[in-house]
Length: 247
Image (spheres, rainbow, N blue to C red):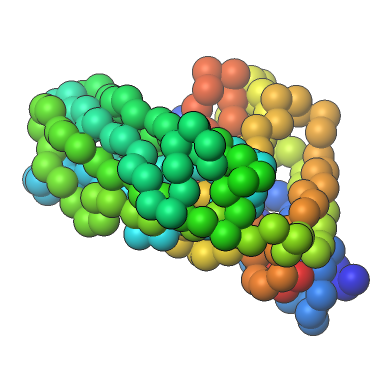
């Protein structure tokens, strides 16, 4: 396997800035690039107070491995004025709740001024391999309306398709983007998936001393990765630059 390395710059409100190097061990040629962009995560998901708020899923299709817990992300975009909440639920397809996956339903809520993405974790079993089911947004309350997509298909990968591993490594940031010393770094989050627009898997690392991580049981194809820094208040940085590797 060959290493793929990119220089990544985190960005966060209240901003954590620092170089994060992600080395992905997989097949394919070496790729190196850098980013100096320092736009905050809130800038990426909020269109400002003059824009009507929309709530939507991050993708129309998600792909999860069998015997795993996958992440579905829900965004509030546009205006952040006022509180808003949205209901969600899973719906059987060829996969059956209670056998192939754990049925999930509930509500996620944004307070006034909040534009942070919300995550729903869905567990699938080994029996779900090769099957699918849906997740839908069901109702909205407060200062928002439905965006698109409001429903998505969750495909579960066929059994026996795992074929590779990736090693990610990074250096911890030491300063905030305002130039002050970063004293409350708490850990890192890794988001990854088989689409740059649907990073459906998440790994939370609750230690500042863990600066590398091996992700295994990856199926063949191209995988995309982002690293986030997290401080002790639970504030997450904006994503690093995107890196990818072929398995």
